[in-house]
Length: 339
Image (cartoon, rainbow, N blue to C red; front, side, top):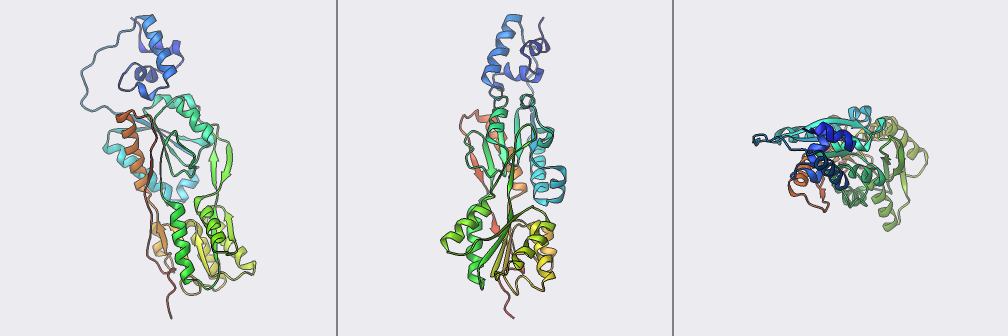
């Protein structure tokens, strides 16, 4: 009698893909043309599925594709906690994260057909995501900045309006123009190469805000590291334009900014107001403690797994965007402390 392995060999797909294609409850996770090919071969071979006792709890398999390097994830608490949210929620819902692909090594799109769903961390090109979707229809992207995605589920936060709010708050305290320090996002291809650098929503919001308020654009776009923060703030100061306030796109960059300001005998919260983003734990232990906008981290991971479960249960053909709002936290760098 023909087996799943026989069908897989002729269809040039994995046994797992054949199993899903022949299961009416799971065939939606496989590309329609693959389902048709597998069923045709199964009929030709006279395949008959083996009947098993119904299982009370089926395990869902999921793969994680990350556009971050191991070093980036290790150095940035933000990504660490997103992963934590994914793993803890997956465990509590019988979802197994079976594999982790780092996009820098290249990922063969055919490999994603092995899993019930895919979670992507970071920014990928439209073309690459569409390529992955040919082999797996259940894709959720976390923390991507591409608003053009209308064919996959996305989970993120409201960075643009948060930035505009923070700039308005800074303007109320500042004695001069507001400067911005941030970085670009890197959009990756499936083969591991860089598609392009794309502006971060915080940088876009700052640019728009300066135009509306007729303020000079005093921005430094750099790397997402503390050392880059040191260099960026020194460049801004050396440019000679008085800085009335500072908005920094992430706490790791802001840690470097604090050092650079300290080297110039300037204290945020005393000489000028400063607001950062992320709300990582270490920010509250700095001197002065960073006033940072808390961004969802674990919550993004939780929401991504919930989206996977919804995709598999509903078999819906439309995509959803989940936005978890951030909020301004407490610290010593904003507002200005009166002497």
